[in-house]
Length: 157
Image 1 (cartoon, rainbow, N blue to C red):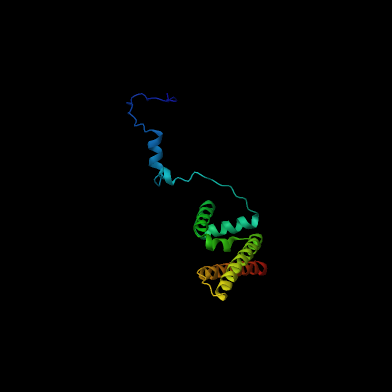
Image 2: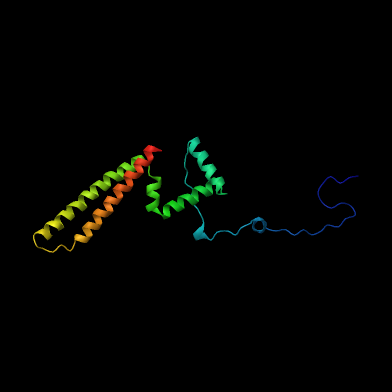
């Protein structure tokens, strides 16, 4: 008669089995070590894309040999670490126009400071803030130029 139930079969001794805890089995099956608590990624933001955007992201992730989630995480972190370059690259037209208006206001303030320094020089006084005012005008003009260039590129592409 064939044995259908669990347990030992006639004529065989039971072999003691080595039982491992679930944790031991999981650690053995894992291929990479667990992240230390301070490095764990606990936040999982949610984003939405239209079909065209998602196809573009999937294609880029595949070219980088990354999953879509890995690609999004790495590209977002790279962008966040270099905000000077990122702001010009990811700004949409509305943000560029806002930056233009903000730069225009800053350029006005810097120009006003420059005029005050030149007025002081023309009246014979010293203007120690002249170099600071010139640097502020230069920075504001460069920002306006970069935003205008970005806006033109967006409109022509």
